[in-house]
Length: 378
Ligand code: GLN
Image (cartoon, rainbow, N blue to C red; front, side, top):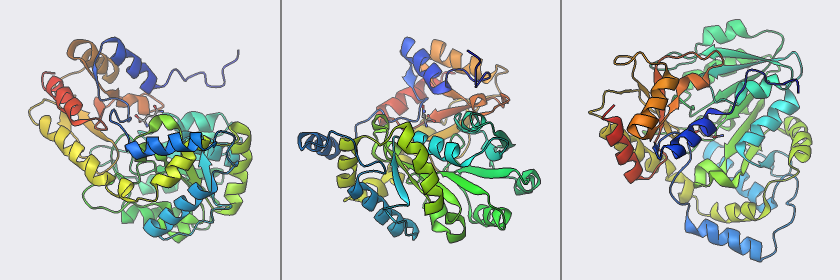
């Protein structure tokens, strides 16, 4: 068939995951925990199934879960989303992003996003017949160059896609970024699509700048969040979207025909777990300890670690001791050293290779220490 995505291959997370499995490598690649979720969550899911919650959920999501989401967002960020028409449970944050782009981006539109970027962003935009407009972030701080953003906004700019904490760089939006985002979008009809799947994983006491914390931004934003990342259940495929009603009406038109509704028993289980906020309020400390454990264990390695202010990830530079392309370097680490990471060139449409790899510390401590030991031999 004539490909709609001729330049796209299999996602890097699948490619590296398979290679890692084949070589029995310690896997610091995908941002997926290798440790269990709260056992209560499993009990709740089992109970929900036994209680007969096994048919379609309401299209927009189980009511108790939407109410729990709205209450959490109001408590943490101050914005009131109406659970009836401004909160939708999605079959993963990925579906939320995809539904938002499909519903809101028209052929010929332009969508600004920041590279390195999660690998689904540009293809989602291209599938709408729209144009991805990447703006590059530069090491070591990967700050958003707002003058370039201003220069790249045109009458066709329909959306700006932001992601904080940022995958793969581990940076977070600052107060100044929020002010700049308000300034560049003021007086336009640009929609902000905000990928906030690591919202509870912001380190060193910094606040998470959800778009829902800032009324002028919230009014034009679709916020996408993830239960998988927050409760260590990435395989459950449940996330959610928040948006003002006019935007959400359009998103639901896509969601209802893409998947109709997200998984029913998992939604009931998640609603019950959300009654104990400690499960997500302690997440930043939990992952900060992992970040610090991995960084400490890599102190004697030749890799040069870049700081991580949030997310499950840190970047490491190796160009000072090897000329290998990052794809080759990662492959050699898997095959010769038995440790898997992600080449950051996969986060650029043009394959920019700055000789950087991404390490995931969403792993149990023994895995982090064993992986670090192998990386110290590289
Ligand atoms: N977000 C995860 C990561 O960056 C992967 C998600 C996926 O594989 N689709 O590792």
